[in-house]
Length: 355
Image (cartoon, rainbow, N blue to C red; front, side):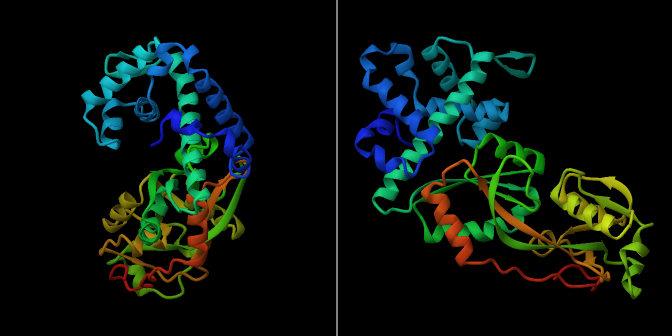
């Protein structure tokens, strides 16, 4: 991680070049930082005492809402995290948080600092990447955020990508659709992976991978002995579904509306793993992404041969329309376009698990 002094070192000399790589906001912000550091002798000592590492630690605590979780994510001890926050608070001369019982509560100063810290750190990363691009190096940090269903196949993309670009560090965030959409709205990452493209904010997108949705049942279900199954015939059976905001659920409901079918939704579960094990226990049928079955199989379930299925959807890579792509992000998009991922197919209707 670069320091604030490194961010601004030689900035004026490369200003025209960086204008091609950074957004206007980032360029202006870098210039403001440069201007302030050029006048460092006139800056308050406390402000100069804050370090980028302290800002990193603070931002992780602020985003996770927990000292313990932040320490685990950053591979630090909790006392180390507490000490960094204490030093940052002392350097800035403000209180950043307090406890109410075991609940961590942030002050208004902390909320303001979180916005500024995020801008400073991302500006530093883009400056570092711009320098790398200037010297024709594929290096830097790539932040990727994916919805939970994508976690099964994304490692199969990241792995060979990292082997080809060993100087690029990956920061991978996994969450449900609402969580990743919030990260998208806040612009916390470079690349996002969704199956259903959000309406807001404006984004650019590219197709990444086919995402077939299939009906699964316990491997000993009598349905495997029947022929000519349709969703309409299965509609009265209990179904276990993802939450309504999930991309999988949205694609399923769009398909059902188009065919005037209403399923008997018995349970809503926010975990593909939990759904698969509930199906294995005979609690109902489900419709899941084929990738959750082929890459993380549960032997006691199988894919039913249903006419008109699978429901064909698509995984997409997204990035903000008003955010300049980093060198690392450009390399990742180029890699995924030139190296399409091929995954194994599920065993259709075997009743003996997914193969």
